[in-house]
Image (tube, rainbow, N blue to C red; front, side, top):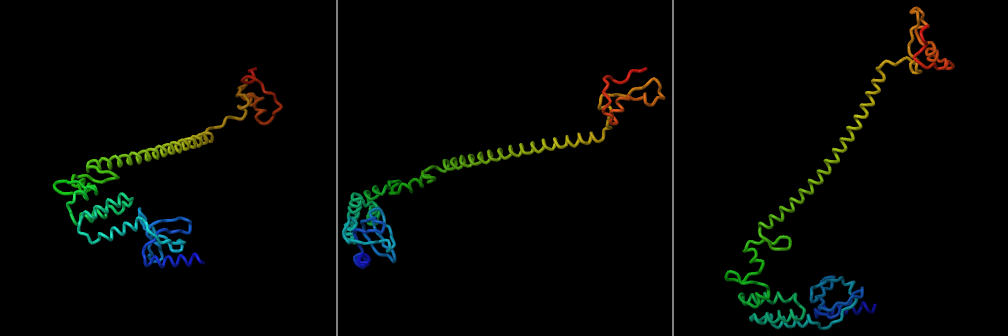
Length: 262
């Protein structure tokens, strides 16, 4: 409870002073910077940027001074200055103090006072091109370069990159289509082989049913036999074969084409 009261008191002081030194979070993390209250959040300005936290996540705020406060004091001291050198000096101090995030803003402020200040232009990476100071980006654009996929290139180079990418994508799609076509061809071949197999079975069954069946007695190895007399009906056939054909299994099989002629 006491900690909560202290936190509320610190926030109240923060609202008036708009600065703080050490911010302790509920997870134990400590931040050193300039803190300020914005609605239901506590914003902490750090050398590399500004972060925000819900008030419920802030345990305590200990007022104090940091290098950021010193920068604020220096910036406030020259905010009415009309001398570009003051902003150049502050930009240099910010860079050397590890506050690079404030360097560019002061260099640009110097250029608003002195648009042709060489030191400010060079510090910002500008180059003197065709009688005027320009950023490297503007120079590249004027020379016909295009910023594409993390680097500068000509329009022709960009087209080549795009063409290679399209060709690679087309080759990939062609490979996928070829694989699909091969699988489809194999599937059709298997289906045709199955159809041919079934057609062959049907044709064999049809031939079996339509062709005349041989006499049963031929299956036992006996053939027709003509006796000495055409009028002798029994002698016209192989008697043993006939008897076996009608079910007389006790009759032994006689080798040879049949009985000899009398």
